[in-house]
Length: 108
Image (cartoon, rainbow, N blue to C red; front, side):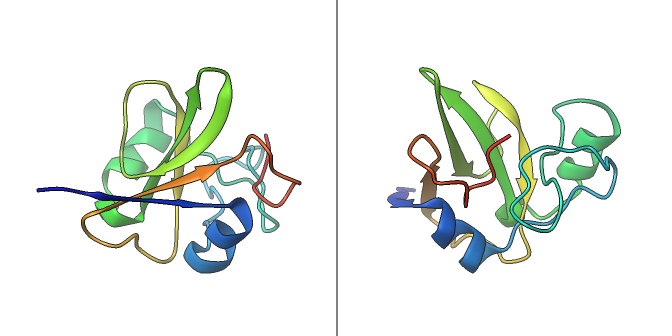
C-alpha cells in the first residue's frame, strides 16, 4: 500500500483538521487557539491516544532540529501527539512544517 505525501502549513492544519485541546492536562503546550493540544508520550495521556481512532492521531516530530506534525502514530523522533476532530484521509501522509510558522501552528 502506497501513501501519498501532502505537505500543508499550520493554518491549513488548524482550519481543516481542528486540533482538540488536551483535557487531561491544563498546562499542555501547542495551543492552536483553544488550549494546549499536546498529549504526552507516556502514562494516562498516551493511553488516551492509543484508544482513539488512528485517523485522528497526529505526531509532533523533531526532525533534525525542525518541528513538524505528521499524520498517524509515529515512535521515532516523537515529542508528543495531537488529536483532531476531523480524520486525515486514508492512504495519505500529511506533513505540517512548523519551522517557518508565524504562530498559527501552535508553537510550544
